[in-house]
Image (tube, rainbow, N blue to C red; front, side, top):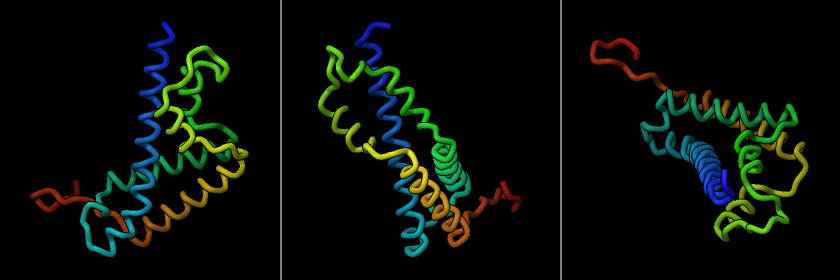
Length: 138
């Protein structure tokens, strides 16, 4: 694969990673806010289950001393930091926002705490399964 295609794919992985992070942060903020404001969407079962599952996977990866799959994939696609092709400005900015120069154990503690918070939200703001028109659960 040529370098420009690899860089374009790395940018797509970065956008996907940013989307996953935004989804997780959105959930952590809007679930309690939505419960307080009585927004029905914060109790959608599949959305809540996906949110909790992603946070659990991230926490488990950190506990196992593994970097995120998306991080590893992006790093493999990008040129080496001393390479001839520097990253575009927006990619460098987003990388700086996502990747902090801290030891992995710090992220493990943070991700486990966030996962515990999401579990607490599951209990405090329980999701509801939708009912079909015949009254059965979907």
